[in-house]
Length: 376
Image (cartoon, rainbow, N blue to C red; front, side, top):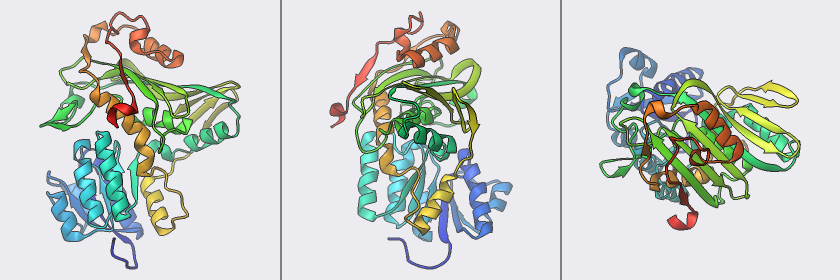
C-alpha cells in the first residue's frame, strides 16, 4: 500500500519523450497548482533543457524501476512502449503506487491478466489512457443510447483514414513490430493509432468490460517494410451480440477525422472522437473533455468519483489486440494498389464487411477468426 500521509501525491513520470512530453508538461502544471508533488522522471534518454526546466526539482534517472524503488511514489504515470507496460506497471503497483497507464495497457491477454492479478493483490487503482473516454461527446452518446433515443442498436462502424510515412514507422525500434526479441509488441493500425476507435465501439455497445467478445474476424495488410499491419479491418461480435466493424488505414493520401457510427432503428449517430463532436439527424453538438489524470486524482481523493477508464474495462479491447497478435502476418500490397481507399474503407464499416469482402482487387487476404475459447 502507498504510504498514508497528508498533502499532494508524490508522482513519478516514466517516459518523458514523444507522447510523454505532453504528460511532463501536465505534471509540471499540476505540481505548480499544488494538486500533486512531481518527484521523479525516468527515461533512458537524457532530458533536454526544456524538459529539465519542466521537471524542476524532480529526481531524474534512466532506470524506471530503480527510480521508483528509490522515490516510492504514490502515483506513477507510465508512458512507455507497450511491450514494456506489464513489467513496469507491476513494479509500480508492487512499490505501492497507483497508475495512469497509457494505452494499450498490454500487448497480450496474458499481460492484461497479469496486471489485473497484481492489481487485486496490491489494491492499487489503474486508469488506462484511452483519452477519448473522457469526451463529453462519448458521455452524451451513451446517454442517448441508454435512453432509447437511437432506438434498437443493430450495428456499429468505425473508420480511420490517416497517412503515416516512413518517419512514423522508423521512429523507434519497436514501431511497426509484431514482436521484438521474442517479446510481443503488437503494434499496428488497429492496436495503436486507431485503438480508440476499437475501444469506443465496444464502450458504446456496453461490451468493453468483464464480458468477453464472442468472435473477432479480421484481415490485415502492409505496404511498408514494417512487419505490422498499416491497413486492416475487423468485424467483432460483441458480448451483447452487436456487430461492430472497424476499417482503418495509415495509407490514406486524403485524410479524414476518424469516426465511430452507431446505427439504431430510429436514428444513427456519428462520433468524431478526436474533435469531441457528435452528429445526428437533429444536428451537430460539440463537447468538452475530462482529463484522465485529473479524473484519477479526483477518484483517489474521493472514491465516489467514478474512474473513467478502469483497467478491467479494457478486456474487450485487449481481446481484439489478441486476435491481431495471433493472426497471420499481414498480406503485402503495393501502395499504388490501394485505389479508392477512402470509399472502400467507409463502405466496409457501414456495411459490416471486411476489406476482403468489398471486391477491392488488392483486398485478398484470407480472413482470420478468433474466439475467446482459443485463449482460454
